[in-house]
Length: 116
Image (cartoon, rainbow, N blue to C red; front, side, top):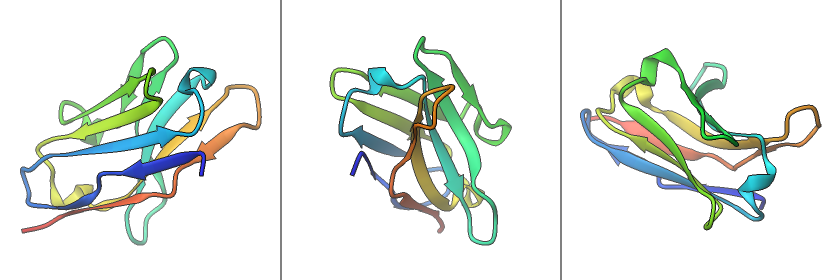
């Protein structure tokens, strides 16, 4: 497994979770790292990305609530999620890709359920 996601679970509305994605190799070899999610009956959507120079971009629905970060030494991508809402319920996938190539890796997904 080249990308291993973890950290999902059941949380109450307003709660927090931190997702982790451990890469088998160096994440420095990828141009863009990101988190996506897919809710039941919906298409997979972008949540957040972080580039090799540290720039970040977020979906409007998660801005100011979620933070993506990377720990290069440990080859881990994080997604800190706060003020969670029921509509954040989805399977979350991490992604690593090299721009201009066919390299586009996906983790296995981790379930996040926000419910009281």
